[in-house]
Image 1 (cartoon, rainbow, N blue to C red):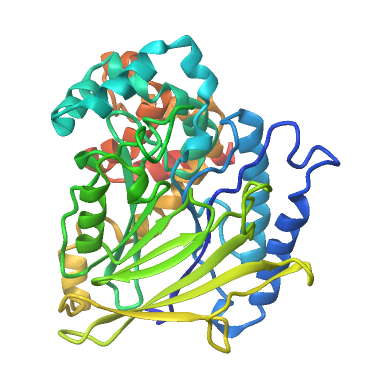
Image 2: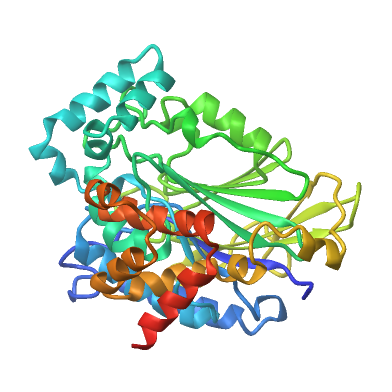
Length: 423
């Protein structure tokens, strides 16, 4: 295996605005996005940035959860992917409060009533389970995120539903151990009434059921940091104990902390609110590399915070970085040795090619017309007629890959998608 770091661009709080972003002369943030693209082109001239593995987004892609905002975001992310030389489908994202279509709640007072009831709950875990499991209440809570799911999250294989409130994806680190990225939804109980003091967001314990293994390194994306979350103490303690890298958004300012064996990053905002104090557009590049083996395994986290320099009209390395513009953190990993080649083949739980290409496969599937997507699902007999009638489109496509994996493996699905893409 090629021994190199996994390298990502991390964005948060991009805030594309309907009727303004990319379509109006009054779009004052267009130069910022252009400068990020230019900055990444310059970074790619360096040996350590010759290859990128994707884009991580910790929420607030849109400003008001409207379709045209997500369309602008997708077009810009396609440009960024081309600049950093990675597949345009290699985007991992979670929703933020601005990705919620707040206008939907005007027609469903039951949604905000449910938010209020959950915030008053004395048994949050049980109340959440009952409401999210309910065939009516569960989908209703996620209704304001429907546009996000259908126009953006689903495109990148990262939608969330009442049945699947978080997502996970698996990549391979340089020592053949697993990097598991989990996207946590902190915005499904968001409304215009959100307040840090007394109207907090909710994550819920169902999104925090980590299953640590010696060969697993964990990265988590979540829009709202723990102090904005009703069950934030549980969120913070679990993530600090069970994960290695935590990526947050929402607060619009940069923060880099080390707690226990976990690095916590708030990247700042690409497009913060202009009347906000200390307005500094920001983004991150981060790399992950495993050093050592056995009992001496360590995760080297290289952080490259980039900040807007107004007078120079460009992005530069943040204060406190070394000569290469980096901040370094080293985390201890569990003892582990990579399996021998013959054991890897004999004990493979899933076709290795499928694991490596799941993200690309999913992206190719989402680029197909809806009729072809539905034709593939029906042709492989993955769901009963009752399930096809009952599940929403997002729920259906979220479960398609897991159902295919359980039934016949991903190879038939791969073949069907490629056949439709060529037709």
